[in-house]
Length: 112
Image (cartoon, rainbow, N blue to C red; front, side, top):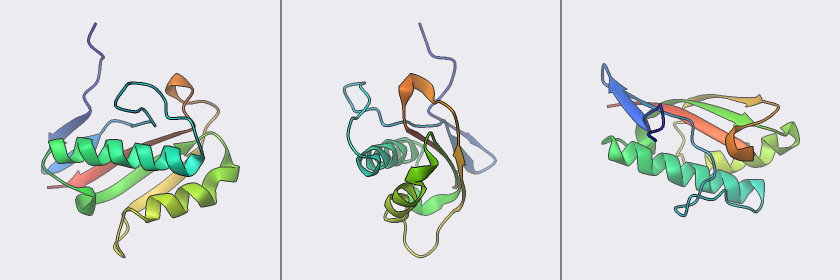
């Protein structure tokens, strides 16, 4: 059965990604620290963006969902390591739960 979403969609010179969690290429959630999970999410997003013909350097907006606000600083620092000085607009939102029991999910908007 096909999932009812696309990893990304391009509209009016913008690429909108679906939220990505810390799934490995084997389809399992990466166990480990929140930093390791954040790195996996960012790698997944990088791949989705590359498939759409853009890179992390094109990202203008990110939304980060976490299940524990105690992880805010660790997530923020790890996320920031993927960008140079020109950071996208961003919010981090604490939620009760995420798909598949994930600890973090990130979606992005990039310009073409």
